[in-house]
Image 1: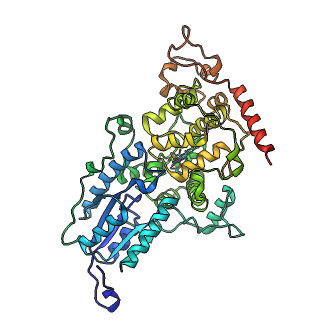
Image 2 (image 1 turned 180 degrees about the vertical axis):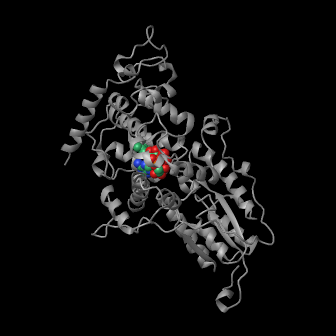
Length: 477
Ligand SMILES: Cc1cc2nc3c(=O)[nH]c(=O)nc-3n(C[C@H](O)[C@H](O)[C@H](O)COP(=O)(O)OP(=O)(O)OC[C@H]3O[C@@H](n4cnc5c(N)ncnc54)[C@H](O)[C@@H]3O)c2cc1C
């Protein structure tokens, strides 16, 4: 343990523990860079303690991704002469044990901003400091820290456009660090668990679609960024709303797990003068974290309190049909099936399926948020909360509840040829595009696809009912 000898002019040679969390990279890794800069031995560790994030412990798809990402991180660290020490158990005691076993004098990490994590990390920091350790946390997850931006009344923003303007006024986010080199390993490595012992992979292998779709890990993220920043970023504005083309970066899981930093993305894309619409979208991620940090109750409760009284329906059958992509609305079903198969869904379609759940079916937005949480490889508490509250009309800068997406019009506009629908709803592959945008008129057995369900609700009727419910809410004192 450090005895503060460095302060007395004697060189401290005790190791520094770098606690990896959702920063599973070696590029632009401020905690690792700072540890390397001490010239002391570095011990990278990862602690699996999902209960500490309850009720938002990583879902099944996230755990699958995490397994792959940790594997890749171990490889990257090995090229730096380091080992990733995997442990499982309550984080504080696990870190204390590691410090004791290795004689470490310091623990460094990069900050996260979800309420349960902030609470836990503050406690860990205080306890380790009381024990005489040097503890440092660093900013590395966002472009700017959630508290770095405030409005003229020194309050958090609740509307995106002024938030974005404030971000622009701050100028470029700080320059990313390059990968450190010449890092000293400890004289003896502490024991570690094998990755398989964390039991992150599913018992029954349902992850074939995820394996076929993704290359988790830092190298895959850097490659995806380079490809995207090369030219697709320049046509992002025109293409980003069309799920039938690959018009977005698909970097969301890599960003969530910190396989690549937002700052690295920013500085790489900025080289392209047409990148502004994309960078603006990246700032939505900062905005989501800003909101969750300042309004920590919103992962479970609506930001707009009156929505606590909204007459949500409870219907497990409807919820099941929605989650399985059996609503009878082709664009909704395509989205839900893409999600199930690949762990990801296009943003435009996320908005459509979310609107369908909270408005056409009038089911609680939390039901949707929970399903997404379990099935998305990019499940992210800040972004998911913002997305669902936006769709339900109960969050910051949300779509007003009375503005209700018509799924047929949405698919006509954003998937005119039905390319996306036909890919994910193969039983409709033989239909003319026009037919795909008129759910009520789709032929069913015996003239049409035998297995495709008829619409579970009449959109026009459901819309009227939703508006009535909303009108009742507005009459409440
Ligand atoms: C109901 C709903 C739930 C959502 N849940 C999540 C979630 O759990 N995790 C998640 O990362 N995103 C979520 N989003 C936001 C958005 O759909 C995804 O970030 C985006 O589709 C990811 O694809 P991409 O990386 O190709 O995005 P790009 O268009 O390439 O954007 C680049 C990055 O910017 C950020 N970003 C883009 N749009 C948004 C947005 N609207 N809000 C916040 N950040 C954004 C993401 O980190 C994204 O990776 C949700 C949106 C909705 C409507």
